[in-house]
Image (cartoon, rainbow, N blue to C red):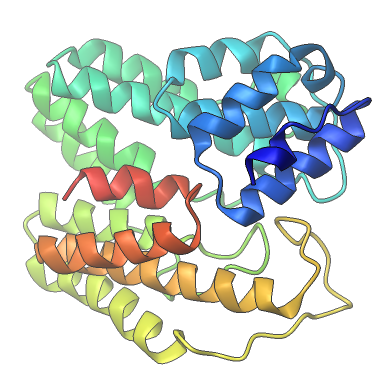
Length: 284
């Protein structure tokens, strides 16, 4: 596999295709990121390759660098790229806010989270109606609680507790992310309603256990697959990763940390670059 990385791409398209191959083969984010940085001039030529680089920065925990990279470029929409740029914008600011919360910098946490709610024009994509922002409002609640603003914290958690609560597949970019159901549950916990919280965590576990070994097929008339997939085996692996991630979130919410860690670990064995599994495993 190291020999494959020795290949010297002669254009940005080749570099993108090589990076996607390395991603499929399970190369660690640090190695992929380092190889992209060796060809930074080529990375800068393509939006899809550039956002892959930003995703790797975020996965490695380099969120300030990710924000700087996002803010130094004007993106343009491309087929299959829906939600990717704004997803990294939101992710970077939420993670910076979590760091601020851990260090009791509550006002700065509020600032980061408010930035996550706004999509600057240079990102090239606006906010869809009904955008799910449960995680942002959950952490906003924690930040306002830290500022002794109890009423504002309650308002944020109330917003975070609402939304779609039925788990779904991970086929298309606008499918219901399991993270949002997880943060609904966390918001209900913050509001003191354990019953509603557990109902959401158990929904994640139940759905994942039921669909873990589904025989997933392409819908050839659908649009906006989140990544370029060639083989049906890709779908089977994607489905198992998604279900194990979902189970991890459910067990994490219920406080079963060992079970959660086991599921996140299995998801990462199958997809070493799964950002959500990296982040939430750390919460175990």
